[in-house]
Every structure is written in C-alpha cells, then in structure tokens.
Image (cartoon, rainbow, N blue to C red):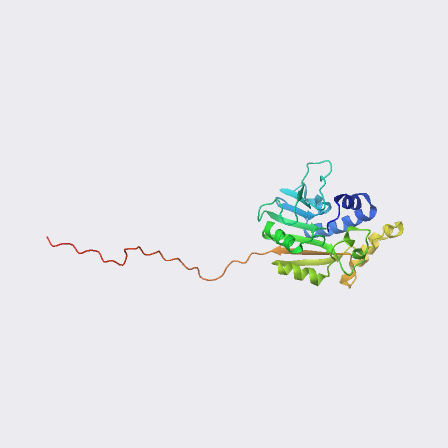
Length: 246
C-alpha cells in the first residue's frame, strides 16, 4: 500500500531525519549519474527529492506519482513536472526514458511485477534505472517512523532475482544510509560520521536501503534472414498456348 504524499513530503522536506536521508541517497545517485544532459529523466513513486540535480540540463524531467499515494506540485516555485498516474499505466510513450529512478514505488505497490513491466516499457534501448528499496537486514525497514518502514523490504538477492526475471541487467549495487532512523539530536549530530564509517564496513547488509542500478538491453535476433518466396500465380502451372501456324 502506497503512503500518502503529504506524509512523504513532510518527512523529506520538513524533518531533519528526512532531509539527511534525502541527501545520502541523492549524493549516491549523483555519484553514479553525474549528469543527464539532453536526456529524459523520470521518477516513479516519490522519487522527486532525487531528481533536482537534473532539472537544469536534462531535456525533460517527469515525476510520476501513483494514484493511491496522491500527487503534489514539484518543484516548488517552478514549472510543475509531477503528474498523477496509475501504477501500471504511465503517461509516457514506449522507449522514451533515458534514466529512471524508482523510490517508494516498488515495495509499496500491490502489483510489483506490473510495475517492473512498465519500467521496462518506458525505458529506451540501453536505458538505465535505479531502484531504491528498504533493506530487509537494515534498521530502517523495522521503523514505522520513516517511509522505508512500509511495504515489502528486500534482500539484495531477492531484488536482483526479481529484476533479472523482468529482463533487467544489474550494473551496480550498494547498501547505504547507515545512520539510525532516529529523530534524536544526538544521532543527528553523529549522522555524517556514521555514514562515513558505514561506507567502509565489510558487512554489506548494514545500510538501511539498497540501491541497484540496472540497464535495459534489447537482444538482436540472430540467424540468417529468410526471404519470403513470391507466391505463384493461379495460372502459373498452365503452359502458354503454342502459336498457330501461318
């Protein structure tokens, strides 16, 4: 079940914990995708906090927000790029997206397979997508005080298997958001140190969220093309009449 857009907005834009989480995930995304000049960038679920770095140079930025969640205008004070849509029917033509970000859109959907099929449909050949989901082994998926405590959490193996099933190829993966999901000032002061330490920990499952980058590769059919033979005419088997003698 999708969360309400107002709860998501209040968390990411009006709470210190939400702003810290937004920064950590967005910084990692920008490290993977430093620019998107001339490209179409879309986000599904509540991915708009991660899309701001691409507003200046991308050809187009689209924030897709599912109907059960609700929609809000974004970005604030600028031309709105967010739109309300169905989970499995996005108002985007097939193959028109170069980069896609999915956050709070997969794990909270009632039909995750259909969401992944729609992701595949809108991406162009060679297009890239990043899925941000709660880590089953992390603390954030166990806390009802953040959006990552709702929906289905994933292990890396589960997410990778589901993405491969829907014809995506995994390129990179990471666990991030090592700070605890606490609003207490003590933890807020040490958040930066915990993130720095967490990135060097050998235990992959320590982070609160998983980020997986995938690509869409369309396989070209192999084999020798077969030319269709021209159909023989109805009268092709009848011999031409011999010329009459003069």
